[in-house]
Amino acid sequence: MQFKMIHENYNVMDLERSLAFYEKALGLHEKRRKAAADGSFIIVYIGNENSEFELELTWLRDHPEPYDIGEEEFHLAFRTDDYAAAHALHEEMGCICFENPNMGIYFIQDPDGYWLEIIPTR
Image (cartoon, rainbow, N blue to C red):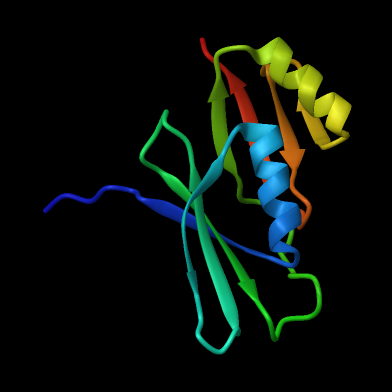
């Protein structure tokens, strides 16, 4: 028996704001979406051509308050081929939330508070 990771889900408060963030910060774009006929939810799968893995963004109409994401002890990691350019972009966006120069990594935070690790190609 074999398993393959295919997606991770993040629930978001403002779907359009989140889509814009992920497009600008990480080059992820919409691949497909599902919407409830009654308007109660929208699910958008985002990704890029570098990987089959997708991030699933879920908006729920009846969840008006921010999500409690706990102590942020989880994250997705992204490897970049141009660490300096990525860092400059994220610094300009104001979304860097933690840096560890000794490890050569940093984290950005999306509009809902999810942390995303940025790792250079080594």
